[in-house]
Image (cartoon, rainbow, N blue to C red; front, side, top):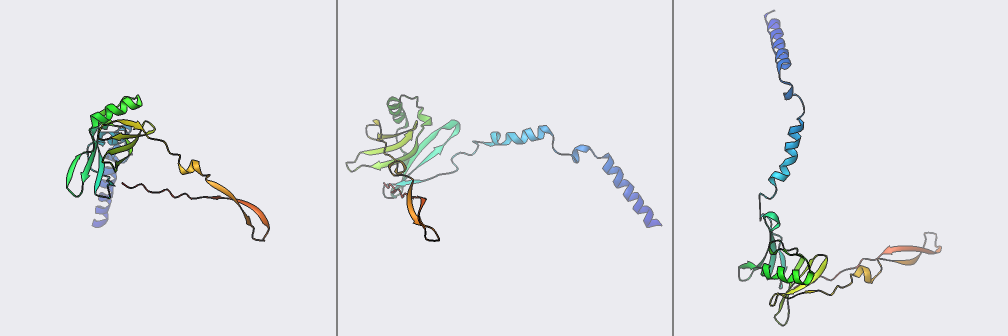
Length: 193
């Protein structure tokens, strides 16, 4: 009888504790909780800078460039000479911004250069060029004079050659004349250097 009484008291205490517990303990989060959670990406973005380097090799894989993305959209382009261990700005950001603005008619902030698909070319005559896309166009910039010119737009292989061609084949029961459209895969040469 003594143990049955103790069990009854324990059950009674547990029931009272569950009934007296605040409902917040057992319920789902509040709207304010979800709003705070939704704000976390915005509050934590741009807190860690320069954590990733994506190398772009050129000059027979002896040099590379990479872009540092900083606060407020700042972009720094850096060149590293792997053989000499030298790290420096890839170009004069202010001069390039000024020349690109003049050539494109657009406003260009030297701290936020809109360069995409950037590559560097060591020309045989010693004149170095930067080639890039900005404002939807291809450009080239002499790194000696900082003259920016539009690059001649090459037609892509997709516009020079049809993506598919019709060919005649025979069916499984050897009836000739079935026309089939077959995709043509176009290999693009890789530009190095």
